[in-house]
Length: 170
Image 1 (cartoon, rainbow, N blue to C red):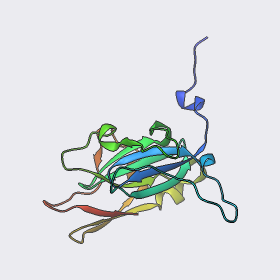
Image 2: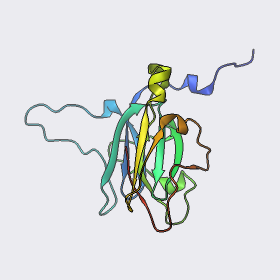
Image 3: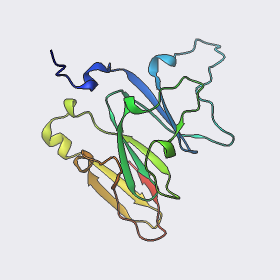
């Protein structure tokens, strides 16, 4: 008989920690990797990075959560969490330049998880928004519904003037 199920149905729903560094490296790690320390614990290394690199985003989400990647030039890319590279607690991750079709001098600045549509009712989803801020002081609010469909080569999230950059998304 033919297989009539979506391939995503075969991927288990598991909580993950998605980590992005300033240098543009991203990875996902199972939440079970991290554990609470007892009193007097020595601690555990959570991420290995290149020289002078720092963690900029750390998000706990599900393997089926859609992730939005906002770039410095106002573009957005979208992918599912399970498509991000799986890493260990000490791995560096994979460069976003190799995963997304970024333009020259474009860097991923912010990662925002999409709301889980299965837990949100119609009117509540329509009221959810994203706020954008630019270096020149421009502020814009967009509905989360505007990002339901994002082509694989990205989409313009906010139009920027020459020399302006995206500095905040929430």
